[in-house]
Image 1 (cartoon, rainbow, N blue to C red):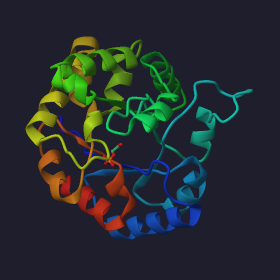
Image 2: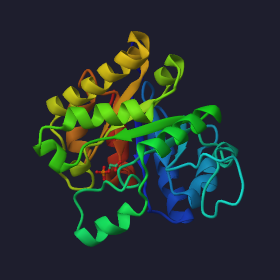
Image 3: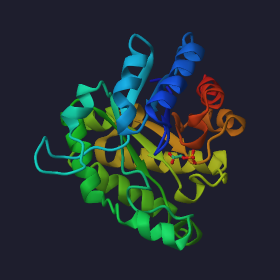
Image 4: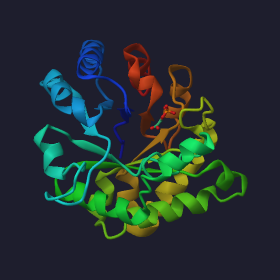
Length: 266
Ligand code: PGA
């Protein structure tokens, strides 16, 4: 079964409302006639609604960068699933290495700050289940730190993360999600994982899904690569057999770069 490639832009903590709408208007214009690849933008929470309005009647989908597992209540700063569907989100990024507190390539000081987010596989699992129950498609991130790669633990790390993050899902649910393999050392560093190796690890992830949920789920689940994806390396990555798209950070902030990456998936 052919899987439709999915390219998602993770804007992280960038763009005011005006800048966000300007970027998305440019994307709508340039991607209007592009078919055969699903395109998603994940702006910061503050820009979700205006971006949604700019995306109305287009083929570009909206995603959020995080979610909380309670429906409502005294949870200062958190965003409930119903709030995301209310503003038209279809996707939500869950377990990004920056929210897991596993951002391994930054200075020690910044590492300390980031570790305060400290998401665990258990909270990620709760968020994945919550998102699915709300009708959102999770983009579940996994990936190893540089030390883990050097110690030969890459496969074990992603297997353990995926097993814990997807625990308790039905095979149908697992089939419909998106998984992003994002080696932490490749995020925002310009140091891309080479295509055969990215493909190999995505294969390990697919085999893990197969072990837990069966062959059909493994055939259907879409697995993205993320980490320093740019227009000049995306075509090779996106044409690997186990890679079904990209989660793009820095290069998703410039319309021309993101459009080139989306088109390279075809
Ligand atoms: P990058 O980020 O493309 O800037 O490396 C990817 C990500 O964090 O999802």
